[in-house]
Amino acid sequence: MGRKVHPVGFRLKVIRDWNTRWYAEGRQYEDQLQEDFAIRKLIKTEMPSAGISLIEIERFPNQVQITIHTARPGIVIGRKGDSVKKLRAKLRALTNKSIRVEVEEISQPDLDAQLVAENVAGQLKRRISHSRAMKRAIQQAMRQGAQGIRIEVSGRLGGSDMARKEKMWDGRVPRNTLRADLDYGFAESLTTFGQIGVKVWIYKGEILPVKAETAEVMDVYISE
Image (cartoon, rainbow, N blue to C red):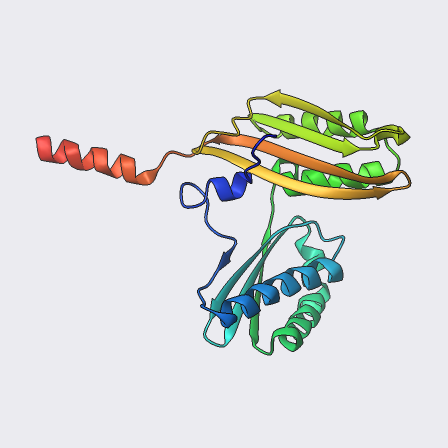
């Protein structure tokens, strides 16, 4: 069996930061972790069609700051802010804390792996051919400037009696390179034949560590 490593956790503190930023110990850690799961589930349930890719949570004394990255900020905010006010009230009732909600727009949804995975999963649910959905997603991502994309679907594809896995890719997708800016997304599609999983990797280039560059500059100054 192969050893599976999550692409985001693999790059933590190298080129990626945590999606949830707070510190706790003992029972408080357990309670706040379960609260984070409940917050994300509530937001996804309340706004299923908002194109939400990432939910960042940051905790302060008696306050929780939530940043929602979405491709459709108008749906999250609502007319005159009605939707975000209702969401803030429900989150306040859930956590019993002061809630601050910020909305950030995703300018290129075709380069967001989570949104691409959800898009492919939605097409599979509408009984569109998996190969056609994968090819279209790959073409759109490469047209938007991605350096590489890989899509894997697994399950009873096309209603076959036996589950199988199919994959398509274009360009470079260096999954074992720490400095690679690799975005990862996963979604599931519940079809009449069963559950189908969709995994997407999108490679956007390399991120060089800043510390190494500053160290080289310091060496030049010292030698001079």
